[in-house]
Length: 410
Image (cartoon, rainbow, N blue to C red; front, side):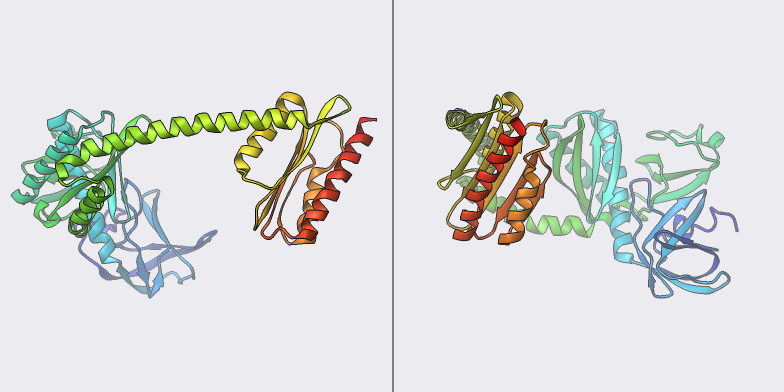
């Protein structure tokens, strides 16, 4: 039997149980790699994942193509020559079939009617996505979904077949062909022909629904998320929930008011973000100047130690400390706490071997039940409960670190 003839899913993707014979079993890092004399497991690739399943009741961890052979990865060995029972996860297979065929339909429509060729496509667990060179408007996406419904309603038959590269040159197909000895075409009769190795439904009507669920700008491309089949039906069942939730959150009565309300809210959030960033920059500047005002000159470098027991933001303190170290070659020793926990932020410029800030933080954490550590020049720690004993230990560490800095400057 040839390597292509072993791939029973090519002609019958609905076949979910068979028996086969193990041709070889090899130990690999992930477990054991089996080659069978025939298989119904789809090897991941081409945007479609393996559907999963069992061989003799043992879970198949992965299946992939290597040199034209499909390798089945399992946890335990099975001796060559053994006849085994094979069963795939048909629920996953059907979902993959639906999403792969839906991708062909959507890509064909976008190429033929929107002049927007698919760059890449991928099937995930319960949905698929397509990446395009041109962004599509909400109105175009609405029309795309409506056109896909028409293709489903027409219930076009779907067939697959292998032909030679020479024969393929005579076929009017969409997309590109990856060079192979034999080319597999998926033909949606009267609608689209595309080279593809994936599993698909027998007809477009089996999909029942295709739903556009979202979009995203990714790496300069426009990504469309979609669902098909049972996953699309579940999405449609929840659309009223999503719509009503959005209307109530945005305070509008009618669905047609949602776009304007969403745009207004987005602008307000952008304005609030800009205001918050301005306040944050102002707070950083105030901290920066304050720390310099309380600094002590040790060896020509600012030495700053402070205990902050009112409102604080750890990220802001870290940012200010980093700036002081970079711009002033400072040593910054901070402890910030509230009623429950305490944080240590120790930083200094590279140079002298002392003080070893990481050593101090590690000891404080070990003695008082905190988490943290670091290097001689950068260390952080957090006390889940900041006790009086921890407070005294931190104050002593402040003085010890200062003494180390003085000795290193001599």
